Image (cartoon, rainbow, N blue to C red):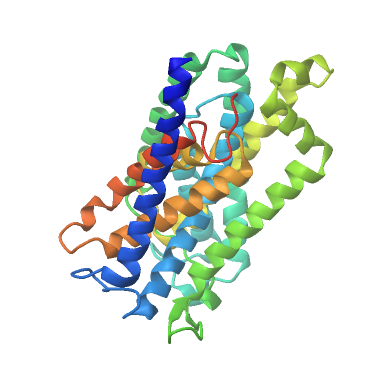
Length: 350
């Protein structure tokens, strides 16, 4: 009884602190952001708008990658530590296929790339990693289902192997860029505060929305989607009802792996792909899923949005000389969410 009495005030206090910090951050950006790269938003609305769009487009990429991680994590309870390596390998596969299709040198000029020469490499990379994911799930993970620590260690080992093979067989792991279609290589007048913005980045945001819409239709409007959501909520009951849960697991792992690879193709188009990014994108996916909640599509979207906005705004609205602490604020966001939503914003007890 005493513990219950103490818990309630602590929860209220955590929420008060969280909302207070959010309010202070908004007020700082809007009115008091002195000695920062852009100054207060009220004095420089153009750069505020561009920063907002940077956050939204980064969130689109985060969602593409993290939604696959969330699907695998929520359905199979597997913390797939090879997810970042799937991103990395998918990006390099898409790059090599685009090189073969265009027949050009190390960097492909944007004007020489048409839409098909971007779409086909991205889809081929997703299909290749989907097949790899299926093999890994069937050979290495199926026989130890429910043994979370063992599965995590297996996927860590696979992640190291894949990352080493990328260095050995894909341009020594040096940074390469997948080229957007030529028609996206221009700025668009937003007709808001005289701001112009990259059409390619707006396309990235559009791709994220399309992926989210397709996932929603699959999970909420198809029988397989309903089975997957039931498996997320209660694996044992779903299996007892006669559902082939191993088939569901395999499909979930394949889709999650494909999303990681497709995210690698999109991310490689926007910021390049290079050895070492596997660890960064695994961490990004973990943060998004923890913020949003395990196995929740809406949670993955919310987590990606919050992470993208916090990272983008802190990078330019922290005082000059302190912008290297932008990544620290993403972990502050994580701590604040967990302070009053221990299972994430849209998560439930597994």
